[in-house]
Image (cartoon, rainbow, N blue to C red; front, side):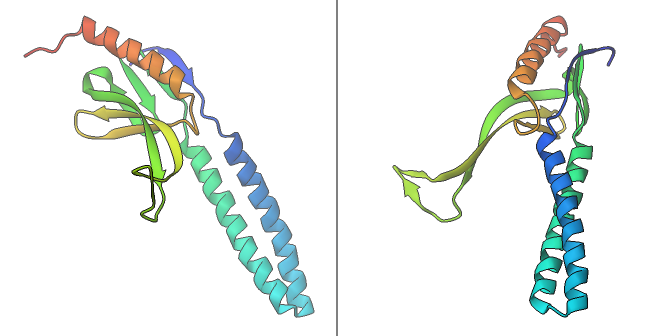
Length: 163
């Protein structure tokens, strides 16, 4: 893979918000925890400890997720995602799909299960079965898919498979 033709930065503003809010809430709960411990206020102690642990976990996992999201780069003969690099000759398929989260209860409306949430994703499947998944929550999918489809089709026309 040579020079970068297209580069797409991840949208991590929501994760940054959760990171800083979690740290702030953890600090506030730590002070409340110490105050409740000194004043022997058991209910406040329990409440501050529980919220502090939840806030700390939220900030840690938001920070880890933010670090894991890297820039998607498209080259003339491949793509680099947070899941690794893949060349166009190793790509089996590229799909843009809508994933649906259904209700955990078997409730149907008009013969279809009730959909709670949907998310658009790009699935880049390698020949060995490895899948690179990009979500609309983190990346501009329409731009990535448009450029990737053009470059892959162009590469396949220039390099037909040898049998």
